[in-house]
Length: 202
Image (tube, rainbow, N blue to C red; front, side):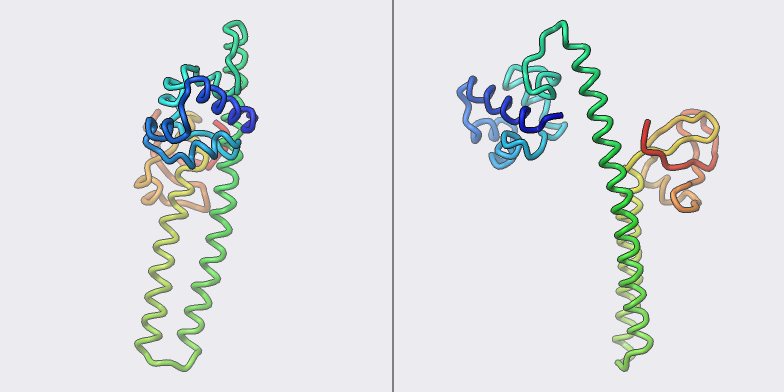
């Protein structure tokens, strides 16, 4: 998707309606800075605001993604293309999130290891040592929850029995036995428990 083209299209349609960026922001309950980002091609509107934006500008979501008013004959073809593009973008974002998860995990482990070594080897009062160890444990728990959340939302888990791909609940991810990103969970479709691998594509 061409973000610059989409941004110019939003700006054009807004001006055709005689609406300022501030007016549009007020109608959508967001800041005019967000409107400016859209119109400058920096980012797309959030899914939660897209429908309202299209209603205000009197365009379809397909028009928005194309950055132009789409002819009805071309509509189905363009819609299919836009859905494919959105899927590709989600997959790429999920890959980046999973790489980010690894980087954060390694940095945290190194930092925690350094704190524990310092607590045991450096000359300091006992209470300072215990404090450093407590901080290390707290950091491991907090970062662990963040990394688990990333793993939950990035990509899908594929059932080994029926091959259904889905996003499990945060609780299911946390209580499931696992080896790396392979977790033993119950499939919401077939109801069977199996070792399920993390996949990017649906």
